[in-house]
Image (cartoon, rainbow, N blue to C red; front, side):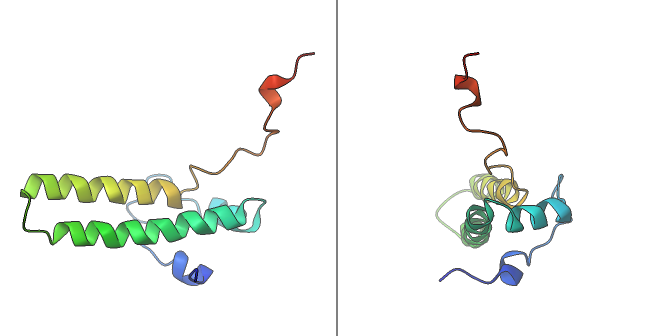
Length: 97
């Protein structure tokens, strides 16, 4: 079961370079709202994964830190709506006037 919007949007935005509450609201209420909710859910799971990676003892500290950072970066990109489809016709490049 997918978490409610309030839970999906409950994260610290201070470290996000390109956070826009307006863009997030538009994404939630737009044509790709279900996809964005899915991305927010994945970001939540990536945060949990990053936290688990930090607790590992079978790898070096640098490896753990880099792995966790990569997971957190991916979560940030998903939250900032970077991977939603453009609001353009999908086959615009196929038009041959």
